Image (tube, rainbow, N blue to C red; front, side, top):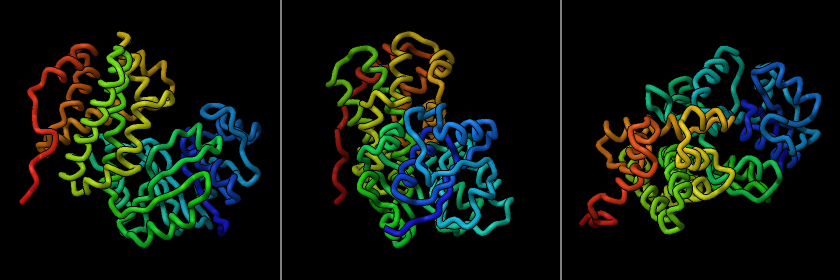
Length: 337
């Protein structure tokens, strides 16, 4: 495996985990954070105590608050911020006036107000730049610990996806390639909404049957939206869809599932988010998905129920009961002849 120079932009849990994983594999990694004080602490402790306190930094991982230092002379960039930080970080990259290597993002969700998927934001600011989405079932803590993980790299240019999948693949962090960027990004966004619903069901102790039903029907909602937006339904059966959905709906490390669990206990949304201490992308994504589904006339009843719950319009129990009381429909649409 050839050794790469890479910059990881964003020192949250996932950005830090990717930086540790690739540095452990022998790549030279520069992790960038905008907070100079946080960087100084990480440099001194050789860890990110805020997000991954038990994961030591390998020797080939350096940390900086200077964006230019994280970008210059790199073979590729991984942009790992919340979706709200995607546009500002891209604007900062453009302002550097430096040659940019291929860029892959791990942002999940729809941009607020514009409801754009990440690839649309990247194209708007960088044009026809070699780029793609990195997504799939992956808890940061397990990746940082070196536990086996498989994720997807989605690029509109399939040759680019295959090339970088081969470059970045390792025994502990396995990559698969696809050219369906829309399908992967919709799966990455909406699975967080479904995880909130699954957390509510678990918090109400509705049982494994109810959780399985929510996951399965949630997958159907994701596939309907992805297809309407130009993605392929089969993509939602892969790592970026079903894989990520199952992990986020069932894993104890899932922040969005924890949101549902705490809401089911009667806690208010502000209290839940304060107690969480991390970004729960499923909350803003729920509202953006609701608006998008309405605009595209896509039926998404689970998403609508989660939105009502988050706005305080219904209780957790009422939200689930309304779903259970819906009229029966065909599980799959008729085949097109």
